[in-house]
Image (tube, rainbow, N blue to C red; front, top):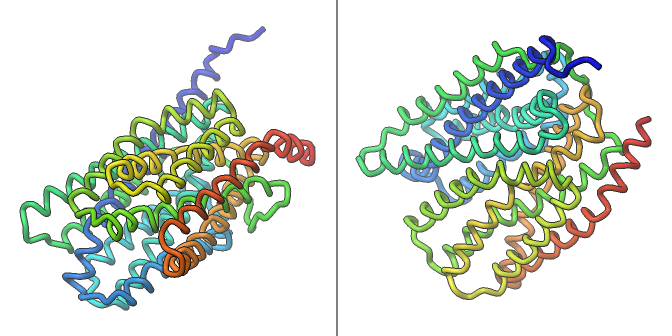
Length: 396
């Protein structure tokens, strides 16, 4: 029997490590730049642009348009190798951040937002595809967890930079936007130069395949759960419990620290337990947390719930690795792009529907509906082994 430690095997393992370090570094660069932009965004649009609430709402809606169009836009990816496409996406995001440095009107802000959003929305599906391809099957979730941990660390560092700059006073928004652009630009150039271990181009099409229906449904349900938290959890703390800005920043920092620690651990849990058991555990906890949002009337326990809720989003790696089990490598990027588009349908629908529900019935109704979504996700996840086996059988 041939040894596993042949020169070819050793070289292949080294190439996988280099490729993973490259995509990890580029992800950290992007998340640091995005973190800087998010950290100054509200002050920038109020102080520099004197934006009105209705204009801000429109800008945020525009921001989600590239997410909805991820699948059709990703058709262009078929003309490039994956590492080149990933680099172009990062360079596009850097261009959007640099554009922000020159923004002086709401119209220009909308244009800059579209460029930035297109870049990072197109990057994430190919990022997932590359990690699936350069990782061994038994370590995919662990690698995704490490990637997400690095992203959380970058976000935390950006919060520290914004806080330090704000304490000095006289924030130079143009300079900070230029600084934010430098990191994804360098990350994009680096990932273009890095061989990713596969020399084939990916499928050039919008890949909607009924065999991947379980992945699409899980992506849709995950998007609904995520957008309820992102839109309404912080709003609950501020609107109902009058949580000050200083505490919200501290909670965000705590959530980042929790993510740094738990993302690799969650990845190892998924690799050890499998996607079905991991998602059932996740959604069991999420149901409890959403019930806490709806029923707890004291801010301190809600602060804990808020941090834990953000930490549990790391279990989304199980949805990513589930597709890696049932789809061939050449269609992964296209299928991830389709899942990203489906996920963003909820990004448009959930905030609007949740806002109307909050206005009609109050905040608890929104989080009770979130608990219902989590329960549906739990019940659906219980049959994931069977659906996975059917998808693999259909492909053979």
